[in-house]
Length: 416
Image: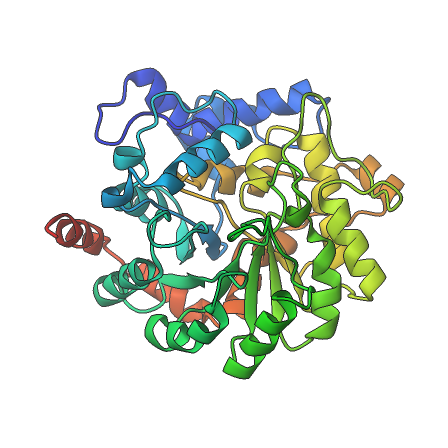
């Protein structure tokens, strides 16, 4: 489950094992045992037999990752990179020693991790907040990446967001041009991001949130992706505004990135839903409940970084996944990895395939069984519906893809 080795280095044998499905099987079986069993169903032979490991994790779901990132190499020294490195260390303390953003988090690593080392069929490229002098990737650079991959791999393998800051001066006046020039599939916003003297904002505030949503409606942008959670409990990082905003704008789909989850402190973990003292994803669930947003509505819960943390905390994972399925419905949970912050997303995909909510927790708390059909929806079909991706066409493109375009794309990028 760890990043195996620096890009381009020769893998020592122990790292080859750790990066393989056998390594994933060993890690998951150890985690399962440590937490009392019943969370990961993995054949013991998968720890040593490559064929058994492939049989344990192999499947034919369409995988669409709705949250992926990279850092432009020429921006490796930008102020925003410090924030990213701090974010990675917050989510995974002490895990990534010697991580160099200019080498390990650039476009070359992105293409390798996403399209060569994982089963990801299509990905959404998004970014962090900040103006052009601070961000790790500008909106034009995001669009250029999508256009490059479109030209070489075929339309549809990469989808782009545009990052907007509704609390920035005159930002709403720029949205029309941003839509016209960058053709985003949706907006990405960070309510936690301050601007000037303002520490943050809310989607339902009258100063910038509601005017932003009104302008989005006027422009016909029907997807708003909001970073909620993974915020060190900053007030503006709370998903409390999602329910009211979604109720006021039923024609806009709100994709809640991270689902409001907060990284645990010590032995803390989320348990069953508590509406009286909500923490983490409970804040989102309470907001939806109070606003009358029901399962299958216009709010979607995304798992980027959330699943990365939960995968090694399976009891908490069972509660979080179970609560989200009950709150937004099996059609409204979206797969995201937040890669490439953690290397290839394949171990995360395989862990999710093997994960199950124990029957005892299902009976006690009313969680649904995490069936193969539900996993298929979460891993790709739900995102295909939201982002207008043709699943059959995407499958056929992946099946005939010789991946030679990855090297061509990297060569062209490096030649600039």
